[in-house]
Image (cartoon, rainbow, N blue to C red):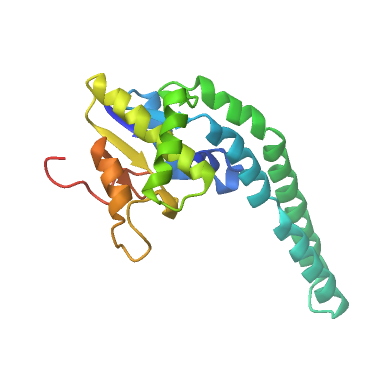
Length: 214
């Protein structure tokens, strides 16, 4: 079976308000539910995702458009019927987003019991690995450093259990083994290669493709 690591950006995509929920993130979990693959998520990503979602998906656009309607109405550039219909849509949009945010913690908590998703805590070995990564001069934030350590140690554990098809779906440029100009980051590439983890830049398990025989 294929074992796939995900982190905070996957949780954000999957647990975002309905109108912004990521299709690829949902499809990836559906593959896990059907036992096509096994997902692995470091548990600290749940709490980080909670703050990120609340900050990123507040329905601020609604107030911006209301300000425009007020301006347009004062200048007689908006017809009364159009303005009322737009305000109704904005009110409904705001309500739906706020309702989604109100139930966010339930969705995050529900991930812990999802079929095919292993939400694992940071072990002592992972914390020690995180400290050891300091000598690699990766220039990572402490949280990213901890997540990298968690993935590397968990991958090594899976390999010792006889699993060889390991991957990491990563949207964060800091943890990808290549930069925005597609130039390889040698140290990160070596760390992933040592535990035989192939890193994808999306949630579709397609890009970039692993080399033949990987």
